[in-house]
Length: 168
Image 1 (cartoon, rainbow, N blue to C red):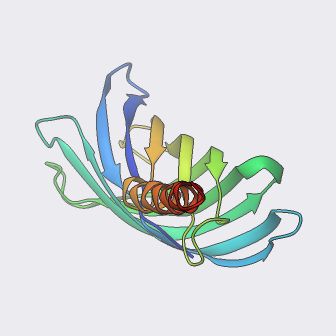
Image 2: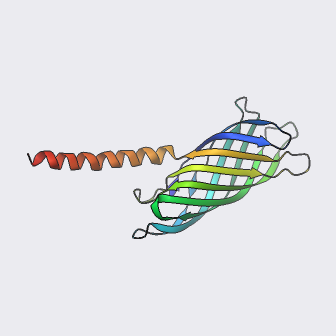
Image 3: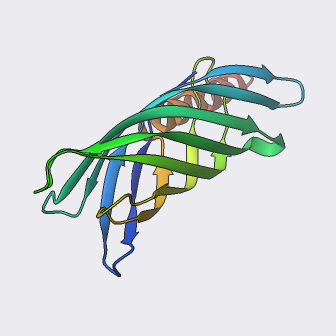
């Protein structure tokens, strides 16, 4: 399954600073999903591109692995771990491990090859040496898959309406 979520939120750093953050975090998940119980598991790689602050102070580029759990009612949780590189610093390239957690709506039910994560994500990049620790609290929304889901729902609604109108 593919997800193409955008993220927006705030990042707090260990020296007391905070800043705005926007990003893109696509995933390719391989899932075991039971459509009868609407539960399952998924695991796969992710990519990350995160811009910290509007003046492009830091641009994190990274990758890693995500493990997701689909619960009843479209609820989903996910944990991830990876590595992020910031090559836009004065000190040269900075590489940090990244750990993340997601909770929210994750429903592969309506898209055969899509996962639609919409919820809250927390990412942590522990500082190493002189590098600051960063904690990001983000809203994650899969805009592209969300638009496809709305289009499919509209199509189903219009077909039902059309069938009712034919009955008159």
